[in-house]
Image (cartoon, rainbow, N blue to C red; front, side, top):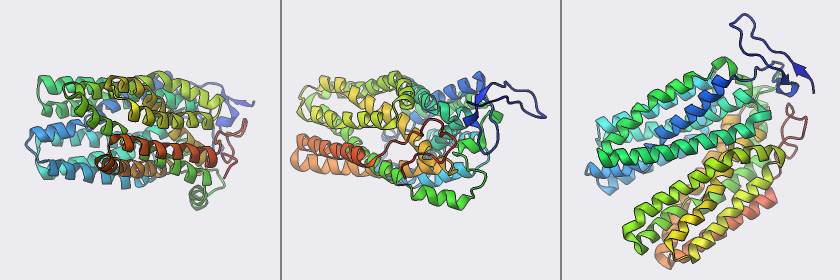
Length: 438
């Protein structure tokens, strides 16, 4: 394999290492990232998960404590959900269009911190609605920006393990934040959670500043457009990519089956064991996070060795099994154990969604737009899931609802098996046009 020595011309010298020739993008050599940048990305993701956790279930608790009606709370959450759904494709396109992914991530993180502060200071309907919309829109930019920074730093040859590491730190951050904010809300008030969320913006931005902008290859971060290819042909090639359409459909089916599982089980647990329902639900959230933290780096490594498809099938296969176990298990404590399966699916998809997006968008220049397309499919599936499960549960009972979700999960697995090809580039084809299957 050809090797190249890299130095920054006319600037302060940076650490230069011998790198593979397949990391040459658009005729330009790329410097392997320094330890400072990689650790900065680790801690940025960890702190960012802390900030994002503040806008989870704590919003409903806080607004209920402020004497809001359930109708008003539902309206705010629904508007934020709609913005998050329709904003994913534009958010990805914005990240593809900007010159600095790091600046895009910084502005989006500031938007989330400002939203938390608005909620804490002015718990009035207009300001809370604006804060919710701002937070949802910021997340549409933030998530693809993080993936773009990762790809721009490490390149295709290391993106699998890097995404596994990202997933681990995000999971750890979410778990720590959920425990810390829950304790903060218990010891002080539900409003204090949002002051803490806003304050966490400071370490988040400090961590981001440790990622050296000069080490993020802007061409590689967008799944670099080849020197001879203009914007239009690359975009058309992406939108006619059959594996992308198949993967978006598979993830939509998966989320249709998955999104309603835990809320539905929460209702069942409340009826079976009302005194312990909150603790059991908390355990059902924590167990998958632990599995994700443990397994994600391994999944990232194996995706480079085995390919994407075997692991994707593993993640999809865990869901129908979980549906059947939820339907036929009366013991709520066993449900917590079964959540290990949720952790397996979450770890697989957390790593493979941005990884397969990078495979499919290669040399199109639209990596982040590709993520937005997949994210929109995920959002559509998740939004329909809860309505479907609630209707079936009310009419036929929770047992039938879980089995119905299991049928949808089996369809997702079958569809993936039949329609989704392997997307890992062949050895030595890193700089090529991407997967052979189109």
